[in-house]
Image (cartoon, rainbow, N blue to C red; front, side):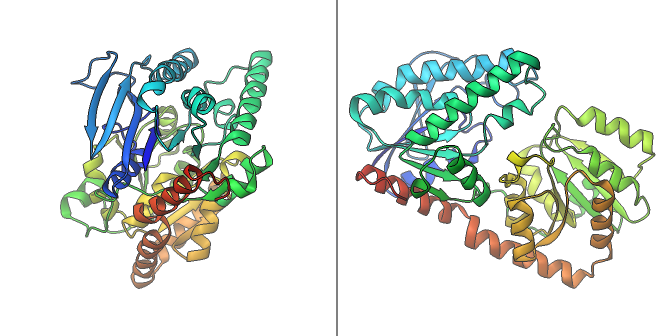
Length: 412
């Protein structure tokens, strides 16, 4: 098959879902053509070695990659982010007619919604079928963020995005979603249920794998012989990381909390830890991806935490897959599919979101857990990842969907 892969983000950016998909599909003998932007995420600056110009092509793991210029931005500015999304919608649409001119089907990585713009003319002119891979529910993930405007402008933005997404869901030939609850949401918003399939995300398998704890990694996380819980990732408005800080502050003599990463809520969390005298909370800042597997191996539990928002109940954060792939048990403070998966497979502990007392109780239970029980949780975690979330399992399903829509089918 000739497969178009349309995504605003692609390696060398940390975009392992489209990157892994392109690698695997090309390895299976498909002709893969990627249409993407010049790399600028997450810093909002074009990566060294790249200069924006029209017509830039390269190869990646057997796939042909066409890069188009964008307005690079990924800060807290709503204007900058909108410019970033819209610019890719425009430049990718101009390039799509030639780069994707005779593909059998197009895979679209969403968000942002503007990525879908590049499929409009190919569908009108050549009836090219489209598979939409939904990673985020819009408009909620936009309107609930700190960037969203208030008042009349905010309401207009919400209505416009909601109408746009309903149309996108109705017209897609197939839709892959990352959880059952997300599938229910897109069906409620116009998608044909016969075209929707749950495909759990995978992780960077070349990085995230079971590793024994090393002395250097234990020193890095500050392990001092007691239960160490690690949060790795974005500290933004959807995590409400201060809940974890308050929970750890209640257990200064039993649990250490290590926070790896950064985000708009980091400074607030640091101030809170200082105000509470939480000497057992440690901030490591951002670390290079190649250091993360060792840090995972050095901590006893990984923390997954989300706000109590309806749109987040269908979210399975990527840090969960990374933890399971590393054979690490988890503590999940969330409602919805992430918590349900952990309970169903007994790979960790769960509690409601935004309740620091309940989370403190789970931290205490983790600290009291016998080593043999913790190790068994880790073994089950690795098995669940391999059976339900691995790259091979996910690409098997997406490849099947692409073959079906390319052959004229609309059910998946």
